[in-house]
Amino acid sequence: KKGLTSHVTLLLHSGEMGAGPPSACCSSQQTASMQPALGKYAHMRIIAVNDVYMLDNFPQLKSLIKEYSRDIKASNVITTLAGDFLAPSLLSSLDFGFGMIQVLNRLPMDYLCFGNHDGNDLPYEKLVSRISEFKGTWLNSNMPDFAPELSSFAIRNIQPDDLTEPPLQVGLLGLCIGGSKYPAMYRDEAFGGAHRTMQDVVIAAEEMAENCLLKHPGLGAVIPITHQDMPEDLELAGKGLFPVIVAGHDHDPMLEAHSETGCQVVKAGQDATQAAIIDLVWTRRNSKPVVHVTFKPVADFDPDPALAKHVEQLNQPVRELEQAVLYELAPGEQFSSVGASFHDVTMARKLASAVRDCLMADAAVVNSGAVRGNKDYDETIAYGDLKKECPYPSSVVVAQIPFAVMRDAIQLSRQNWTSSPPKEANSALQIDDRMEISENNIITKLNNLEVGDMKNGEDTLFDVAVDTYFLKKNTVFKEYCTKHPDRVPPADAGRPLLPILVEYFCKEMWMKLMENAGGHTIHRKSRFSVAVKDAFLSFDTGCTGKLGIDELKTAVRASLGEKLSSNIMVELMLQQVDKTGKGEILESDLKEAMRKIFRAM
Image 1: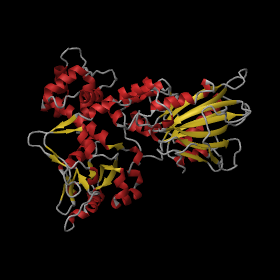
Image 2: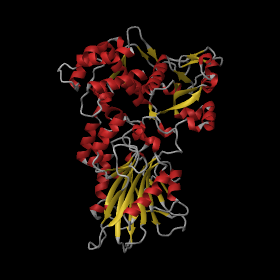
Image 3: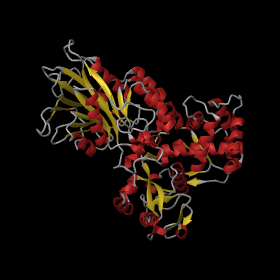
Image 4: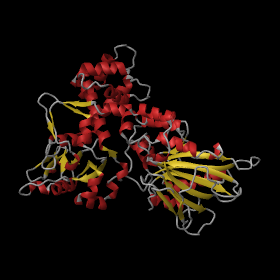
C-alpha cells in the first residue's frame, strides 16, 4: 500500500481496461485552477476526506474547498466524507456528534456515508437526530432496514463545457463495512439493530450500480463512497464497474489501482489533515472519464475565520472538562496508581471495573503500562487525572474469551512480578473488582464465579473488555485470536478508553442522584417505576413535566455536592438521557435511561 504524504498526482485513463496499473508522477507546480486535460467535454471535481474525529482542521479545509472550487462550475464540484465522523472522540462523547454536523453543514459537505463507529459508538436516538440535522445527502446503499430511510443512491448533474449540451449525470453510492464477513463488528444495538441485515459492500455495490443504470440510462459514471478495508475496496475495484472509489476506514493516506481494471481506490487519511482532489474528465459524452488524483495538505491554507471561531466555541466543552471533577471519594475510600508496573494497584482496578460496567462486559483488564499517574487519591478524581493515568489512545473491544485463556494470559503477563526479586512489567494485566487472584497470580474467580460454578468449567466463555494492542502483544491472547477470529471484534470496532471512562463516571453520578432522590428501593424491580417517578417529581420543581438543565443542576448540587455539579458534567448527564436533543428530559426518558444504567452498573 502506498502511504502518500506528499503532493502526488496520478493520472488514470479509465477507458483503457486491462492496460495495467497507472504510473505516478510528482507535481510541485500543481495549482487549484489546473486544467487536467485538453479537449474535455465535462469536468467533475471531488474533494474527499474520511475518518474525521476532530474539528480542528475544518477551517483550513473550508479554505481549501474554496480555492479548489475556482475556475470550475459550482455544480461540478462536490465534497465527500467516507464515514466515521460522529464518533469516537472526546467531543463526541460530550455532544454525540452535534458539533461535527454543525461544522459539516458550514463547509458545506455534500455527500457522506456511514462508518462503523457512527453506528457502534453513538446511541441510535442520537444518530437519528444527527441525520435530521445534516443538510447534505446521507447515502446508505447497503443497510436496507435502517430507519429513517435514506437515499440509496444520488444523481449529480454535471454541466458540460458547452452550455447548450444537457447535463451529464453521475451516480453516487454510500456503503459501510458489514455483512456476513464481519460477524463481530457491531454491537447488538448498533444502527438501531439494522446492521443485522447489512449487505456485503461488494454485492450491494454491484446491485445498486445496476439499479442506477436501469433508472438513469446513459450515466457518465457511478462512483461508490465506501467505508471498508483496502483489500475489500480493491475487490470492488476489480468488478470493472467504477472509474474511481472514494474510500475511508483506513487512517493512512492511500492510493491504489486494481491491476486489471485500473480503477483507483482513494483514501485521504484521518482527521482531514489533507484532502484528496479527484478530477474526472470526459473527452466526449459517451466516453469513460479520465481520473486524476491529487493529495493536498490543508496546512497549506489559512483557516476560514468564521468557521475557526465556531470550532473554538464547539470545542469549549472539552476545555471545561479538563478541570471537571468526575468522582468524589467516600470517607475512608482511597485509590492509588503508585507502582502500577510492579504490583496490583487500586486505581487500575477501579478503571478496569469502570470499563467493564460501561461496556456491559463480564470482565475487563487494563495493562499496567497504561496506568501512569503514579498518584494517591483520597478526595476526588478529575478528568485531568484520567488523562495523566491513561495518556495513550487505547482502543477497547469486548471479546469472547474462555476462563482458561484469561487465566493463562494474566499469569503470563505477570511473570516479572513473581521473579526474585520482582521486576517491572508494563505489560502486566490489572484486573477488575469481580476477579480474584492468588499469590501466584492465577485468577481464581471471574465475574464472581469460581471455576466449579462455571457452566462449562475452564472453557466457559466470558465477554471481556480488553485493549486491542494487548490482544496482539500478549502471546496467549494472540494465539487465541488467531484460532477464533469470529469471537474478537476488529480493532477498528473498539472505543477509546478516555470517553468510556467519562461515560462511566457520568452514569455513576446518575445512579447516586437517583438513589438519593428515589431511595435504595430503586434497585428493587417491583419499586423501580415508583422510585423513578418520585425522583422525577422531586427534580421537576417547575411542575412542567420536563427537566431542563437548570433544574438538573439544582438537583445535582443539592444531592451530590458542589464538586460534582460543574456545568459540563451536568450537561453530560442531561445529554445521556435527552432522547430528542431539545435539552429536556421527560419522565419516560428518565425511566428508560435508568433501566439501562442500573442494569449495566
